[in-house]
Length: 159
Image (cartoon, rainbow, N blue to C red; front, side, top):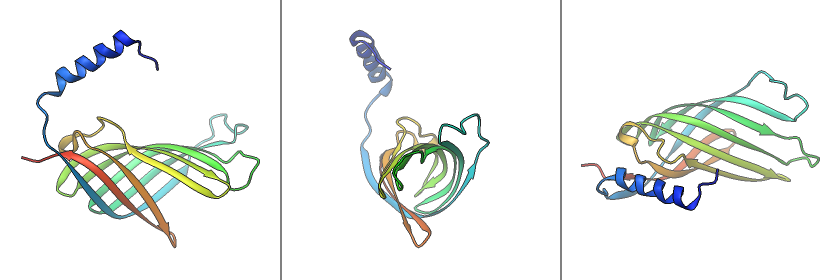
């Protein structure tokens, strides 16, 4: 989406007007494990496209205790084995350390001839409850079939 110069300036002015006084933001790190269930979804006329859709259900443990639900769109329709990509969105609901709420994670992953690259970011302004204004990035590790996460994030300081 393109916003012209005047529209962009107006949008930035409106955002500044609604942001109120700035609170101190604190950088933190969370880690733990999770279980994931991926369920293929009904093909909606995409059989020739090489695209597949899956639902995501996760249970998080550790510094982030909670669950998530989401959707993934993937493609392995490449002429080179070991290459493909996926995008996903998932809403996480639970407790991050001692703060409760929810937020959305956006995934963008590629595999180039067996070499993975994955970016998982908190969608800006998706935090609710005590996780309002959450920002950050997550990394996922898979070792012997076990999933773990590292989450670097910022939140306003609690009062």
